[in-house]
Every structure is written in structure tokens, then in C-alpha cells.
Length: 439
Image 1 (cartoon, rainbow, N blue to C red):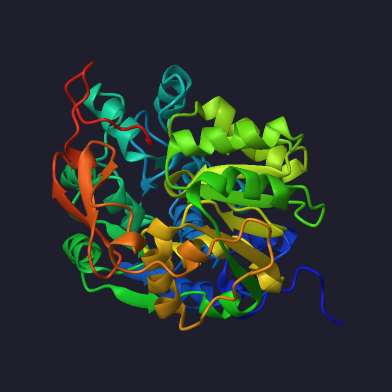
Image 2: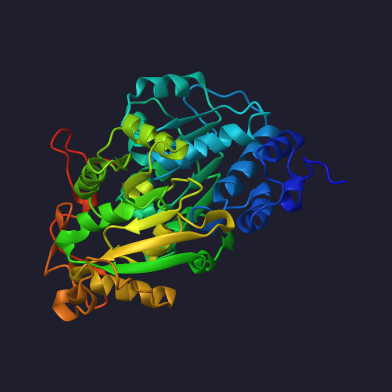
């Protein structure tokens, strides 16, 4: 008879105390990325991994890290961690920290998570006590390094997670500053959901003779999702989403918007018709974001309204529906968004509200997923003009402002920077340093 704590595949090569924690967490068989990544990481090799959120990626690097620390026991030194894990958002950093605690519960591994948006004193105290593993967002890490609280000279393993989002958020200069402070002799792990040229160049500058693992984008999950598009006049989107949320079938919903102020507006509209919901984006305090996530997971909130960057790394099971209030500029983002539902083999629904200026975004999405998304022609606010928009009518105007930079939309529906300062070049009026609103 199979014992409850029996572990399959590469999980069997874990130390008993780590394997016990994995088993108690309910895992017995490794996911594909874990099966591929854990063996070379246990041998100390560098790695480039291409995998999306929800593939088991975090455990794929957390478990070998814990094994390394358990086999090479050292007392933690004040302000000098042995492992550094960089993540782009507070939520993802917190989830990685939770994984270290969960899988390291029977080891003597110490860890802390640091990020912006909260006071630094408790974080500084934790670092000063001495920790093995430091999980950090770039902004707060740079701040504490500059203040002399953190010394990276003892780092043995460095992990850069969600590198593509780091690039999107303008953190690459900070990352290069961090890398300069690391010892040359170290194990480096690099993970990204996509591997565009700039991301690949960063990866190759970071690792040496790496093992490479890649898990295909979760397109099979797209096939398990019931997708539909509702063409609507832009001014009627609020009325349409309120009508949709009146249905009890939409019991746990993530609504995606492009802009923070739009997320806030959608929350006000939904709350006005009695839908418990909250917004999560970079302008929200860490306390507010943590509470919103906890309330959403517990079921106290029916809907979470989020921007793409804030939603990255959020791991919530049982999402019944994803609603694209705004169509994403990048077609790959659509796959990431709707992948929030239909997780762990479940089914899900994705509804996209598409106005005329977003029509080309939808065409690019359908080209990527090689599927024509079914159209709901029967809803009361259906707009023929939006459905049939072409040329200039199918793009979001001649120019769209993105933060303080200007973005135009090319013939392929992709955003193209045309002038003004990019987000990574924006200066803070208070300190003169670049804003780190997400760190």
C-alpha cells in the first residue's frame, strides 16, 4: 500500500525533513518544471528557466535552495544573507517567502521578505538578526543596501524571478546594481515567463554554462476556458460589467484594467450595485493589498479588480471568471490573464469587453492563440461599430499616454514608444531617484 508521505520522481531525492514538508503540503508528484529543474539545481548548476506562473516554478527553485542550506549548515551572519531571491512585486515576494517557510519548516532555515510600501524598521531588524534567505523587491533592497543594512558579499545562490516583468517595470538598472555587489562565485537562477531578446540578453549576462528548462506556455489551459467577447461602446462598459456581475454564476472574479484609476472606478461602480470587491494596484498600500487578497481568497469579496503588474504572482485557486474590462495591449498578456481561471485542470470562463479602439488588440490575440473567440451578439449593449472597426477606428487614437511616456499603436496592434520619458526614466520630485512604486 502506498504511504501518504511517499514521494515520486525527483521529490524522492530530497532530504527527509524537506520531503516531509512537501508531503504535508499535499504534493507527491513533481510538476514538469520541477522534474526538469530540481536535478541540475541540486548539482549546483546555473539555470535559465522559461515558465509561467502556476507551473510549480517557485517550488522548483525553493526546494533545491533549502536542500543546499540544510546540507551546508552555517550560522546566519548579521546583515549577510546566503541566498537572495528577487521578485518584481510585493505579492510575489510574499508568496515566495511563504514557500520557503512551508517547505523549510523542518529545517533550521531562517528567512525574511522585504518590500516597499511598509515601514522598513521590522525588515531591518530581521536582517540584522541574521537570515539564510532574503526575498526582496528591487526598490527596497537597493534602499537598504544604500543605508548599509544589507551586505551581499556572502550570497551563494541568486534567483531572479519574473525577469520579463522586471523589464516591464523598469527595474533592470537596479538589478544590474545588485548583480555588481554579488560575489563572482555563486549559483545563479533566472526565470521568466517569456524570453524576448532583452530578457535573453540579461539572462546570458547573469549565468554561466546554465542548464536550460522550458515549459511551453499554458495554451492547453486556454482550451479549457470558455472564452467570449462582448463588443460594446466604451461609454457602456460600466453598465455592461454591472449587468454581468448581477449573475450569481460569477462567484469569484478577477477583473483586469489597464490603468489604476480605471480599477478604482470599476470598484466604485460594482460596490454601488452591491458587489463586494476591491482594487489592487501599485498605488494601494501594502496593508490594503494584503487585506484585499485575504478577503478575496476567503470569499468575503466576489471580485478583485487589478492591473496586470499588481496581479502578477497572485495565486488564488477557484477563480470562476476572468473579465477583461480593458483589452490588453500585448496579446501574450491575454493568455496570462485568462490563465488565472482553469487552474489545476479546472474549467473556467473568460469574458472580454471590446470597444472599437481595442479591436486590433483582439485581432492580435486571436492570431496568437489561433482561435476566433466566440462573440456574444445577444447582450443588450452589443455594438456593431466596435465589432466591425478597422483601420484608425480599431486603434486607441493616434497617441496614448502611458505614465509620462507616449505610446502609439502600430499596424500590428503593438504599443510603440515614440517620445517622452519611459517609466524607468521618471524621476521622483522628493528624492531625485527613479520611482519604485511597485517595489
